[in-house]
Amino acid sequence: MNFDSSFNKNAIDTFIKIATISILVYWCFSILRPFMMLVVWGGIIAVALYPVALWLHAKCRISKGKASGLLSLIGVLLLLIPLVWLSSGLYTGGTEVYSQLQDGTLQVPRPTQAVKELPVVGEKIYAAMYHASTNLEGAMAKYSEQIKSLATTLAGAVGSFAGGLLQFIVSTIIAGVFMANAENCQKAFNKVANRLTNGKGAELVNLSKSTVRSVVQGVLGVAVIQSIMAAVGMAFVDVPAIGLWALAVLLMAIIQLPPILALIPVIAYVFGTQSTTAAVLFLVWCVIVSGSDAVLKPMLLSRGSDIPMLVLLLGALGGMAMSGIVGLFVGAVVLSLSYQLFVSWLEEPEKAKD
Image 1 (cartoon, rainbow, N blue to C red):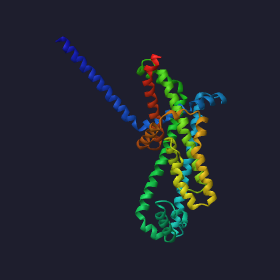
Image 2: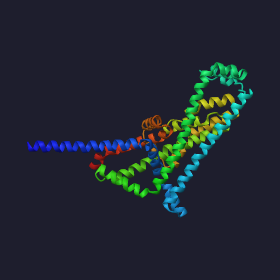
Image 3: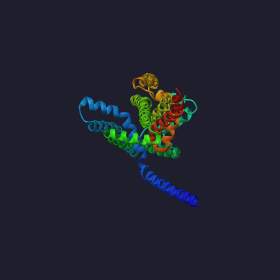
């Protein structure tokens, strides 16, 4: 009887402790949830850029904290440039279109025959563009619902893009804080990992760092460079909605598919609106952009390509569905890291036998 009573008491005490800890963990998670993605992305940026901060520390003979702050400041400035450019372009373009609509001077250029020859949708696009070029008011009345739907979609996409840039800026600042306190952060992670893995914390942390850096440099870094190259080419041939097409290229590159798949509609548009010479040059540029990863990955010391394409695809798409453009990056890195840790855990018994 005494044994049963003692056992029941211990069981109840254990249950109360576990329930209390679970409630506290849930509350903490709920409180920190709005900042979770920003902090995780900031940590990923910090892990990827910390070697650069160490290089600045050695070359410029400044403290690690100042080197981290300088690197973070440069990152914020680089992110502010496209945000200011996007805001300025939207304001200028919107004001100009509104003014021309008010004055009745807005004109839509007549489509070329090349537009009509596009497969499947060519004739419909040609008819709509021709109607707009000859009778803009009538075309706007006829396609008012489609125009409203398109405007809503574009506004949402632009808002998401701008919000993503702001999140990037905040995460870059957080990354600077992490890098400035890198040694303390590593000690804390080692302690947590040691408690979770029975003394193998250092190995786990080193594997995590190498995986994050390889995915960021070899997959995300190459994808960003390819999207920038594509955007530069589109700017030279006056392609509308460059940011959206560049985002499509970015997504294709992250999931390890040829970026030219996202550029096929753009190439068709350029062939329909530009001269043959300009269109051919743009096509050649797109082929170069799509194949540039073969050169860029070895230059960036990529090991990220060892991650299966399905893992990157699910991580990128799932992350973007959960948290927008920031989730696109975080999802790919987090799922790749989880995959690599899982593979390492599976291989442990074989290593022990050897």
